[in-house]
Figure (cartoon, rainbow, N blue to C red):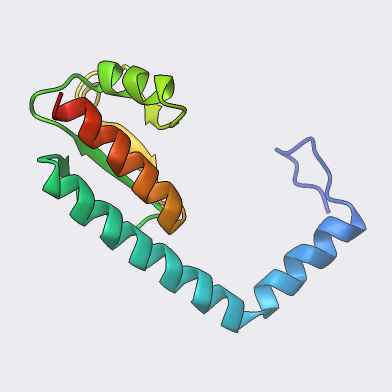
Length: 119
């Protein structure tokens, strides 16, 4: 399979894997539930650290801290081996795009942020 706008064709194994994942409804629902739970946990943790968290139905949240610049937060997290996305664009430069991770990853992120914003 190859789309006209995509120069990377999908091999037979990739196609078989894609089809299998689309047909496995139970796995999809389980994965979906894990992301929703993780996102809620992440939102609660961020709110507890005084972050403003925008409503999200995705596998990530968009959040900012009223007393911290987004670029500075992203850099401080990177120093602690925690990677989030920061966009130096008007209107969103103070926000971080934080992907919903595993429970352990969320705990590491929240602990790192607590150390940064409470310092």
